[in-house]
Image: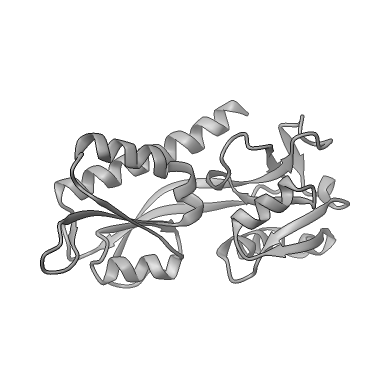
Length: 220
């Protein structure tokens, strides 16, 4: 719980990557409202660098982010490896499949997320030279735009699994040979003990992440 301003109410503050927040935020906020109906909640859906700064500055007690080189004042708790998935529109010839290989995507029109995002770098690092065999026809700055382009029939995209909400005219497929994953983690300050409220929110968020990732894997 954080105080914002001399006369501000106590706020629950959640710092989380946008691509993770999409998959867990609604049930997390509903659980918070049920437990503390009169406590307002502030959500920082920010980048990896911004989340680290929010936690380091004590604006947020913890942050949900990806595993990278940590700042020395931050402690890192690894949560789970989240797979990337192929997203295609309903009605596409791949939509009935459960899995697809990168080789099968060589002739597809693909939409990538801009290089400054960690997602594209993760894909490039995993694929190596194989990335040059793919047809990247479009580039978007954010996941939401890439998914809208898929929905419009412009191509297919590859994004972290939690960033895609089920339905909405889209299908997700596991990608193999090789799979692409990112390591999700929680960062906190080393010199700070989380309050009971912050600990509850953190544990609830971690449980939702694990349930979503493991549940999707079981469905396949």
